[in-house]
Image (spheres, rainbow, N blue to C red):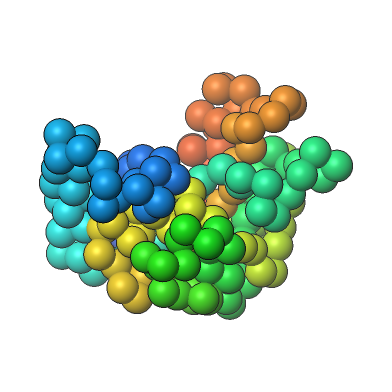
Length: 184
């Protein structure tokens, strides 16, 4: 394992951001009351400004799957997108605001995260091509990332039991930090 001095880590990870992805943000943006729309717009704009200034080469984005890639007959706790390309949102309400039918993936980093997880006793699922629904695309759209940088999408099940425990998610966060820091 390569050890990085703290200043090298700061060059690798340029930020950690969180944003809402409620479907109404895309579906009803134009008719949302100003009292709801304006604070959301300011928050998304600020996140977008920070991300654009940071100039990331790749975004590792975590969101749930809303029955787009998986259903009750096959519902992994975690799935890593390890492909070179992923499909844009399939929802009709997203197509009118998010014009990207496909988005670039970052297969080498996705595979590195997968290999790191397997080496540390995590067994995530993998996909060479995911459909990135509103959970992934609303933040990218509202932050003004057009086109977005390459993405390593990570789906975490928070819809139907069995869901990963809080402790397991916390451990997954540590694993991601290690995987990103150890990526050459």
